[in-house]
Image (cartoon, rainbow, N blue to C red; front, side, top):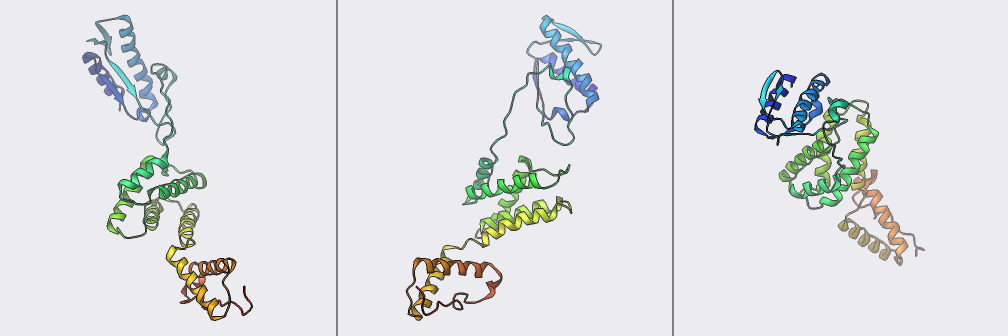
Length: 266
């Protein structure tokens, strides 16, 4: 975008009285922005003077007073420039707030077919917040809304390919596949550890069927040993079942069978 291109746009807007919205305005180089401020100020001065026509870029052009310009920008992103003060003074700023990413993720996950969208959205936003805080600052890292929408669309594609798969695993796989190619070597161990923490929390949460199975096994073992199964004993057996099935002893075919209560148990 050059100042000649901007001049042609302003000339067209001024002669028809249209409004123009310039998206990502601070992508324009600072040299061009300095000239643009002079161009737009000429139009505003002519409007204040109530002129029917005015001199713009050495051309006498018609002026329709309804002409206006609006700009949007994302400060802080890579490749953006700070607006000159004389250009800022020509526009009225409008403050914006950061949207609640959790609600956006929840609705996107539901639209992609996920059933447990709310807890998944909470985990997802927490993980991305940790990535933003713990990983290094790189020009190509993007933990914003654009990246979130692209990742959730990929997760929806995986969900449609395997509709019966665990939704936690589907989203975790999408997180890994989408982000691993852009993570630097130094940040890779941290990112993989965050993913592993998610998968570990899944493995350490016993399902209802596994818990029922552990209770049945505990009752059978205590009955064979002529013991009474108290709530405390049941809780210890359940903890043992969880550690065996999610830890290194997961290969054991009957983890509770080897953990029989002693003859004097209560």
